[in-house]
Image 1 (cartoon, rainbow, N blue to C red):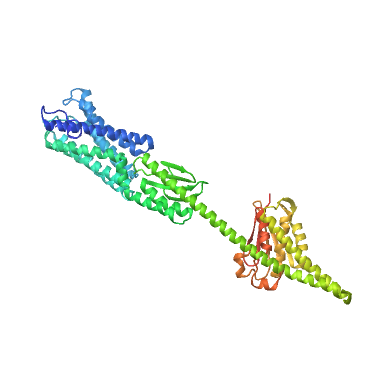
Image 2 (cartoon, helix red, strand yellow):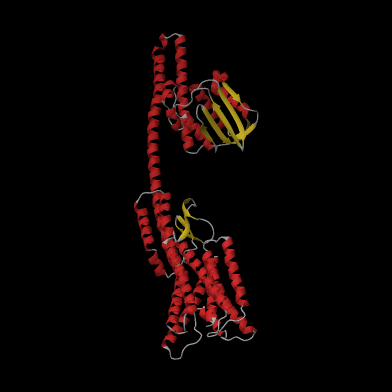
Length: 579
């Protein structure tokens, strides 16, 4: 029995005339060759469409097997001369290389250790050298020398060990994978095992057309069909495999339409089933504006498939274990993206409605607070002014000059208080309407702060220390005046001397600090310190005020693209860009 006949699954060399069993064996052999060609073409197509080393190795392996089972038939049974003998050895070498190429196909999914890879390559190279070094390959019925029998054993061991390794690696690769990828890899694993049985069976069969030959050819047919289906499972089979995942996806989609969730919750709910149902290694969902809502698995590298629908971008990174992404998978991803987009739009509308309702409730609360506070704050000075005016009007002729002067001073104080309140309310209206015109100017900071302190502190200016090095900044002087005056006034009202005003310029920003030696802000006030109309505890009882100063100061700072920050204790920090 010739070696290439014993170790190939394909066309038998000859057929017993008139034997029905021989005809069947020959027909199955033809079918095997057709299947091998199909696997080669599908692997090449997969390599062209998606790239990857696995498809290249598989195409090379079955390309060799195709050549062996077709062109190899032309090699003479009793070669004479250099050319025919070389053709015979090349024919055998194809069988030597096939399990090695199949092994490289299996290891392409998950990289193998370099040492083991080198060992397998070395053993294959050694067997290749042995193939061409054989002095003689006996034909069927000829005596087999001890050297040839040793070669045959080495050949079968090499083939079997590599095939078993391929079977195990492919089977393990499918574990922990979604159903489609798992079933596909398990089918490839079983195909490799079946092909190994067919090859080993051929080595021990008796006769070209007996029952053993038929069994071997059937094993080869099953192996070829399994490889063909494993490389690219039909749509109906993929749909059957992922039935459970589709049900989970449908449940997730139903929840999207019925449960009130945030956009990120929606994206997170849909990603898991989406990855499972198409066998991806990772996926991400972004909103229409590019915001990343959720991501799962490996979200980088090649094999990226991007599906855009109104308001959502679904990107998946395909797994090397998954079959082709065909039209069914793309349509499924488009459906998932479309439903997710609808759910995200629903949540967006819900969030907008919620934000509008909250804003309306807050505006209503602010308005109530404003009316109550304005009425309360204005009633006292208005009542006082009205009383003083009545006194001067009706009883002025009975009062001496000293008493009249006292009343005039009280009138001036109360009208100033009303003017300040009205000015604050006007500031709020301008800030709310974004009507503040910020005009940065170059000014000398130290001298400007000393002027501000002098005006804001008045007779208590000696309680305020300005510790600022000379230097110029570029800021809006009116914004600076409003904020610093408010902070110094608050420190004088609620804090304790000494009050320190310091500033530093770094990274294009001026950082100005106002700090006093007092106990700082009341605990119950800290969280709402910059809210409008915020006054609590001792501050409310001890000092008159509207609770608008800090809110206005922060609004001015942010209008200037800066911020006003409370750092604890009695320390406030103003940050403004200086450009």
